[in-house]
Length: 311
Length: 241
Image (cartoon, rainbow over all chains, first blue to last red; front, side, top):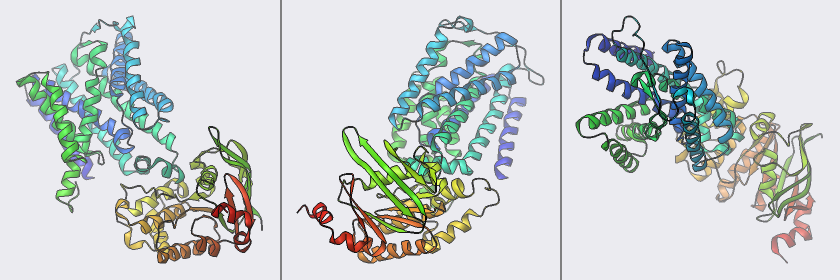
């Protein structure tokens, strides 16, 4: 219950901001932060709970973005339809990828997911319909009432998706599914001998995680009014999605949220005030600091410092 | 007595190495069965083939009248084959109670998750095994003997008809050995068939009604504990004389 009240409050706050703040830049930056919250939350379902490190975030994210473009170009369908289509396509990619690669363990799985990203990028570089390697300029339609600016609308949509993603991750974490995934991370063989159908569960986690990443990617083309393969399938998405849970903590659904808010906010500030190149350095330094000083992330640190309080 | 587990002509090769060749064993319902053999004789490989962690190359494994040799491990657990691991494999990030909740949720209450009292049931098993006071302890902070007990408790939580205990006593003190032995006797008393793999001869001889000795992937002797001890092949396998 507390979870739903705080989610509703946070979402109301986002809507309130959208209604009152006039400077569009806040929404431009806020959108990116929320997007990384969704990506990190999605990543954590497979990477955090089950312990399968996925470098394929750009593949799912990018497929979602391109699905939205194709749907928009072919049918001019509204944003909601684009997002749903993106979630379905990326979920299917997650299912297929999972089926083919989740028999691999540890580093081998991670390498396979990088390969998936490369395959997806190559596919869209060679597809004329979506503009090939040069990309596609997109004209934003008028924002839906009551929104006056398209960016503000995208911000609110992303806020809604954030709540949805966190709710899904929370459900998985606290149910029997989450327990099974954690059993897989701790010992796959023991999990299997305790009746957990490890492959099915991993494929399920990969599909859900992929679908959420795809949904997060769907509004991206409209956000930029442009799409092109190299930036859409950029490895930075993988790094952001992976680093945030590491920083925040992988064991609890709030970990990736905290990590992504901190990381993306710092990145946004650095991009504006210093340089966009320094971005990547920020991620690297934070990651090293946390792996050394707080291997279980901020939540792990809080638990250690205040053993009684539950985060 | 009827047969619960029938291993028929099972072979397993790793590359050119024959870990098991043409092994046939029948275990009766409710039996206390011992499996011994020197290191590397194929005991754990055989158990891995029965529990589904490995697939046998030839032969078949029939459990309760059903050929399970092609089933994945989790299905065999659901059929009623549970095991403990030689080197304990706890779910280290979970409490002892949660460790037991995994088989309870995935095997026993698969279809009745909402109504089941997993916590209460797990506590019952922990009481039987003598780990009740550790229920909320993180599995990663258990001692060696507690880990062994939890392995057995987790296997029990799957409500097995056949329990395979893979060297549950290795490295334990003699007091702890009799503690674990007592647990296994108690479990067998409730009607569960137990296969014990063990190096500690006193324990396996005291526990088993029937013993099979493996050497280099073959059965060299089968019989009562007394017959095994007296057998020349067994003495040769162990002492190399």
